[in-house]
Amino acid sequence: MTPKRTAPSRISQLGAAAGLAVAAGAGAVAYGALIERNWFSIREESLAILPAGSAPFTILHLSDIHFSPGQHKKVAWLRSLAELKPDLVVNTGDNLSHKDAIPPLLDALTPLLAFPGVFVPGSNDYYAPRLKNPFTYFTGPSQSPSDGKHKPVELDTDSLFGGFGAGGWVNLTNRAQSIPMKGIRFDFSGVDDPHLKRERYAGWPRGAAGQDSAPHLKVAVIHAPYQRVLDHFTKDGADLLLAGHTHGGQVCMPGYGALVSNCDLPTWRAKGLHDWSAGGSTTPVNVSAGIGTSRMAPFRFACRPEAVVLTLTARA
Image 1: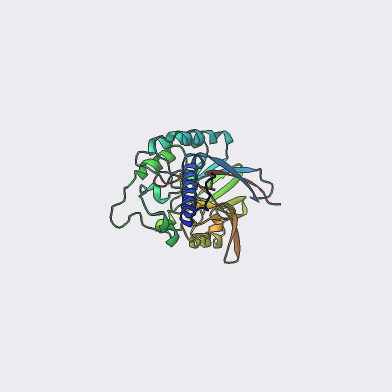
Image 2: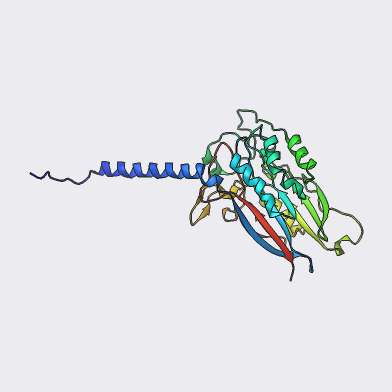
């Protein structure tokens, strides 16, 4: 006698669906933690903003390395970037994710320190990351290194900056400096981390009378692209702004993009090259999706880690 088949109960159907959802979620987390966060990429962009007649100039934009000891894949990839032979390296901060990370990070960056470079800090160049509820990112960015209960772990920022400086990279923390390269005077202005509200504006470098008639480019370097900072530099005549901090959203929705930017930047601007307008002026802004993640949240989804190669060419 053939057994009578009965339709699955509503409870069993819901249980199966829940099981599939849990399995899919676990698979996505495993993918993000084991594959995508180490699936390093290079995004290439070009901008025609150099003075007329200038030769092409390449900038390698690094951000949010968030280095911890033992990240061997990241070390190998960072060292390989020297093969790009950039004219300039710009580091927009958040280099560390562990108090013991400075010596191995400097070793990984040694090949890139052979090239001219400039840098500004992020909060994770001052303080180690702390464990936090990821859903707090949806309630607005937290601008305190402390959770109110525990004292933040301070990092050896002087050693990090000293290592960069020994390699020849220029510290732009609330400073301005001119650097001549390939027949162009690059006027840099940088700020300390706006996420910690530490930015102070140094203006643009000033030198000889009539300096503005010589071929030059004004480049602003910041960590966190808060609107108030983008507005300031755009109104102040910057030709290019470089920033990081957002991780490109870090966990994105395929076909939609970032859900958060961890600042007041609109989420659709959380990574990539966009124009920013303020005070009647418009300036291109490159926001890097970053290279690493906090060691407290070591995964990415639909948002590969990246370095950015910007090729600057002469204006038409």
